[in-house]
Structure formats: C-alpha cells, structure tokens
Length: 232
Length: 348
Ligand SMILES: [Zn+2]
Image (cartoon, rainbow over all chains, first blue to last red; front, side, top):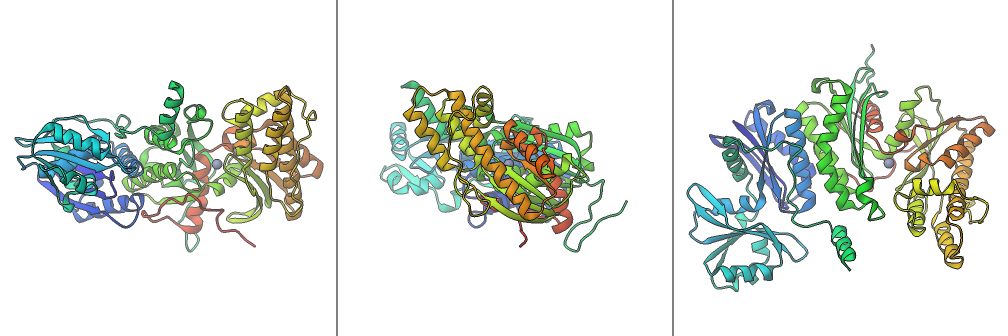
C-alpha cells in the first residue's frame, strides 16, 4: 500500500511517498517560493523519482495542523482534490504528532511546540511508548508563558521540539529541566507523515475527502470579536 | 472538426471539455464547459449567509469555507455534467484578482486535479472571465462591445474588440459600485449583501424625492462613488426621520444614472455595437432596465446575461480558459495566485 503524504502546516513545504518498505521518496523546502507554487511540482517530482504512477497510490495523507492557516489550506485543498480525483481515502495527521515522532527515543517528556505567530504557540505533550509516541494532553494554543507554567507543573525533564520551541528557546531554557531540540527537527517531517499514516492506513483509520477538516485551534479574528460583542 | 491552433497555444476544438474552478471571493464554484461555449454543468455554492452577520466578506471566514466546499462542489459539477474524469481535457482556474487566501484554495485544488488527471492547467484572470460570461449566453454577440463590469470589487468599462483584445475605457477612482451599495445598506440597517437589499427597498421609494449628487467627473469615463456615499450618510444624519425607501431609491437612482451615462458615452466613443453587463451589481433590476432603454435609444444591442451568469461562477472561468489555452497554451504547475492583478494585456 503506497501513501502520498503532504505537509504545509509550517513555513516548510513537504511531501513524501512511502509504504511498508518505508519512505521511497521525499521532498522538503523551508525557504523560497510559496507553498502553492512549490507543492504540486514537488509531488510530481518525487513520484517520478520513485517511478510511481499516481494511480498506484492507495491513500493521501495530510498534515491537518495546527499551523499557519494559509499554508495549511494549500496542503489540505491539494490533498482533498488528489484524493477525490484518484478515488482514494485520506488519513489526517496532526502537525504536533509529526514534530514529536522523530524524537521518540528520548526518556524525557516531549513537548511539541509550533509557532502560531502573534506571540502564541501550538503545543502538545508526548511520551515514548513501544513502537511510537503517545499524546498525553489536548493540542493547545497558548502563550509561551502558559506553556512554561504547564512544563513546570508537570515537574519532569522535558525535551521541547519544533519551530515554536526554537523561537521561544531562551524563555524555555530558563526552566532548568528543559532541553531544546535542534533546528533540523523544527518542522514536521514528511517522512514521518507517511510512516504514521501508513500505520493508520493498515488499521483502516481513513476519512473521506469531504470529511477531513483542518485543525485550526484558533477562530477567525472576526468571530472572536463577534462573540465578545455578543456577550457584552 | 478542425483544430484551431496558434503557435503559442494548444489545439482546442469544439469538443474540448474544460473544468473551471472559481474561488476568488465568497463563491465556491465549479463548472464543466465544452468548446468554450456549451455549459454542461455550473455549480455555485454561495457563502453569503456566512458573511451576512459581519456585514461583508471576511477573508479568513471565506478561506475556511472554500476548503470545506471545494471538493464537494467540484464533485457535484462533474456528476451534473454527465462526463467522466477521462473526458476532461483541461482544468481552468482563477489566478486573480481576488482574496489571496480564497484564490489559493481553488488554485491548489485545480493543480491537484490537473496532476491527477494528467491534463493541462490554465490560470485565468477573473475580470477577463467576466467578459466571457456574456459570450456563454449570447453566442451571436457582435464585436466591438462595451462591457460594464460592476461588482463589490470592481467598476470597469471595458472595450471588448475581439478575443483577447480589450481597452479599459474607465474605472472607479475610489469605491466599487457594489461596495457603495454595501456601505449604504449597512448604514441604513438594510443588511448584507447591500445590492439586493437596496434594490428591494428602492421599489417602494421615490427616486426623485431626494436629489443626491452624481459625480460625472467630466474627464473621461472614470467613476467615483465615495462622495455619493458621504452625501447619503450626511442626509440621513440631518434628517433622521427621512423615509428609508426614498433614501434607497434616490441613492440607487444616482448610481444607476452615473453608470448608464458613462457606459453610453464610452459605447459611443468606441463605436460599440452593443453594451453588455457583468458582475454582481449587474443583477440590479433598475440598472438592467436603464441599460436596455439606452440601447434602444441609441440603436445598440443590449446583452444582459442572466443573474446567475452576472455573479461569480466557474462557467465563465472554463470559457475564458478555452480561449487562453488556445492563445497562450497551458500554465506551468508552479504558477502562483496574483491577488492584485489588473486587467489582462490591453490594446492601445
Ligand atoms: Zn467577479
């Protein structure tokens, strides 16, 4: 079973093709042209390199966020349309899971932190379990200060990974028991996306293209303002 | 059946079937059009209700709705067209102008479809698509034509001299006509969208009860609606008991008078054989009547596309895609969206 994975939830554009043999081809670019310009040519590139026809793909996996809204929508719209045209199901994977997955061999508590801009971060806590990671908390949106107090409350040694952990690295390193993940692990890995999605696909944990939704975790500003106005 | 080929372009013919995708503002739309003319299906999912409580289109709300609607809308357009995936020869998509977040959803989906079906992608200009909307309903249309594009985002007078041959005759210096309708409707508490709300309200009013200014801007065929909007607001402030129906009627009459006067002048200046309307405001009943009156008086053809063809739709995108594919060929898969792009390559 071959899976095409698409990730555009952060400033990085990534895609990969893989299956039970692992990742056959992958691409990522963290700088340069915009997501919508890069993504589809990159998909075409990796499938040619791997000598795969799109008709051989059995499922489309996509990073559903949380992340930067505009990028996220480019990946999800592309993934949905591919799934529809190829008549295959979809697998949605969280960006925070994807950032935590490559550091699963640590004994520390893992906190995956993605920069949400405007002084906020998306984050979730994870622990190593046999064969992978387990998410211990809800995926949240909060300020770095809120994240710090949650880390303190957990009272454990923590490994913080993701572009949010790097951006607020100084603040986080002030907490004595926090180590910061390296820059190479800052963004979701398209390879991990295919691996995690393949595991879900084997268990037939699919969604249809019309059911898959982005995980925004933040309402549109206008709706927040509207609710505040309605309440007062 | 003859293939029509140009050096830059791709062979297209009367059986060439194009899927159009349009998401530039707050309508998620897909359509299947054959030979640039024959509409096999046209599906438009309007988000008007989502934006109504905010009194205007909210970009983030629009983008989120497009992601949810894009594949169901395309799927429905495919089903209603009766063609199979294998019958689609190209995918045309609006690349601009429009809201960047909205455009990106349609562009991303269109590229994915073009890749999956292994057919050419063709990025098109939304304003050029509005010109082609009229051709879809009036195949016998004669050039040169004056097209008045009036919507929430645009107020343009375009000389349509032939395929790909346009001359901008006039445009708005400030608000688009549709924007003025929205703002005045909001001020009068008539709700959103403002165009239909004012149209309805005006029916019960006297358009001559209040004389609002008509900014005729003697130099050329440009428009300005901000002064009119301010005049309406000032009038209502000074006369709080004024009848809303009369204000709506007077305002609408002023907008229509200016649009029609300028369109008539531009049509004369370019020697147009007819006048054509496009854009959301082209659904306004008074504007339609007034344009027809002028056409009768001046011996011109009046082309008034149906209301569904005036407002944003993907059939016009597929139609212009057919011409663009022939004239320029396919777009590369790495094209981006161009939110602020102007009118495409004009003459003279
Ligand atoms: Zn339009």
